[in-house]
Image (cartoon, rainbow, N blue to C red; front, side, top):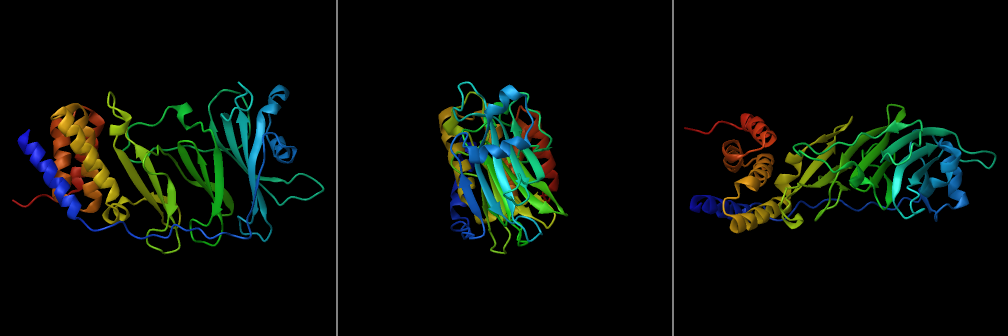
Length: 340
């Protein structure tokens, strides 16, 4: 126990000496005068016209509502598109701010003569409360790598859904960043059509999901926070993990090596929680495997081989949950062998 505590405190001291502050990044998105946002009150007739793009039993049509739309050019044509967010209320009680389904509609530029023609329709989420059938592309939400649990289906049902338009990929064309509860999705015009290029569960606590230009190269990285749940341990003690994705020209791919060496805050937060649990619960084998795994993972991404190996070997030796052991063994195989 004494040796474990000494190693832990030593790791904390070393981490305190690592690199100074987080990398300065461009987080300011300039206002775009070519984007018009419109917000609607519940069941505003102006917004309700977009609900006609969806099919549903007649008795349930009243459930549809358009909280917001934007008008902007988000493809490679000179004309602007209409991007409308459509939600289906649970109806019990009516319009209490909880949604059963949410859709993102992309349509051609509007004319006074008729409703705009649908270009693409995306199903953001469906809690299964109503059987509202709509032809569209379903967003398949993913958990960040090395996260071994995801929120229950209803947990990403939001009290609010929103989107904004920003050129994330740096190609000069605006993309659609959508946030809905415990989830984020990005829809972009790629290869002559609109596609989801990123989606993920996110469980924000001290951090929030965001896009940020870490290296000021004109393309935005995506930071996804996730609260790692530990059974029988208070919410305040749940370690928080951050995954960073970058655009490689075709897709958003994981690149935590780009994030962790330049930002000490998540690692320090993990170490702080680890030490707090250690002092409260002794060796706390039952939850220590989780802290050691994510500390080892953070050290691995930082290139701190010795620290990474110590934490991950602890997991292999003491952990009870097989997915932590297997993941730790996989990462250990990638580490250079220690000199003898």
